[in-house]
Length: 301
Image 1 (cartoon, rainbow, N blue to C red):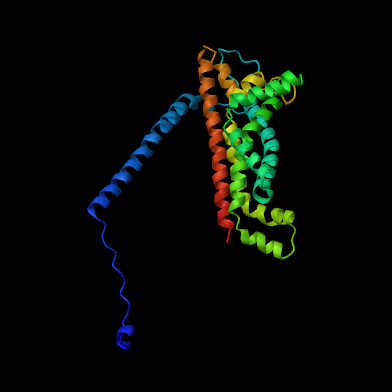
Image 2 (image 1 turned 45 degrees about the vertical axis):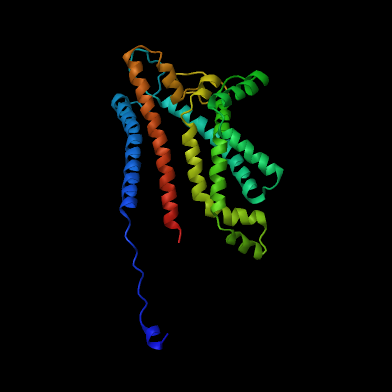
């Protein structure tokens, strides 16, 4: 090979055009995916349209968000769902206060410390707990909290059942976020003589915190509309109850179930209004999780 030939520029390799058969398969697969997506959207859009059409009047009515149903007759469309909103937020908030620390510590153990039989057993139990139906969790809390300990039905018992439903979601989401943190950051911290627990607290957790918070919010949105625990573990009240350990307490799913037995038109409006309110709450939580993740990504260098 001469020097002149070496000085000549290297020619780029021209890609061969796709064959007709591959192009047909590509277009066919794209069409099938788009059609499947459109079919999946049909029931969702139809459901939202029906709920908005039937519950929009109740949600936009004055007093719906600020009044309870205390003293309101079944055939009278008055008051609001303030008592049910309060009960829903309190029950989900207490459940989150219990489930989030347990879930975070479990995820840290599995990612940073877990090895051997204990880690395998913990992973297996989290997987089993993720598949437990809500009715089973409610019955377990009923048999333990009420039948065994002799305590009465209360909103706190509902929160305990929601903890069982939230815990696997928090563990799995936190575990995935911790695994996404590069090992080089841990090794650099260890090389500087920083203790392992301090590395986790000061380096690993701040890096994974946006994803962890998003996972927690999604876990709250997942349990906020559960019906089985409130049907078994607490009674319905048409007014606000501030004590989570004693007495009945309303929630949006329990209000919907109770008003289904009301044959009056006011009951029909309250059912669909409460359903739309619950959808708005779940959508707001999911939007907050997405917004927090987006803002966290913008702040990263």
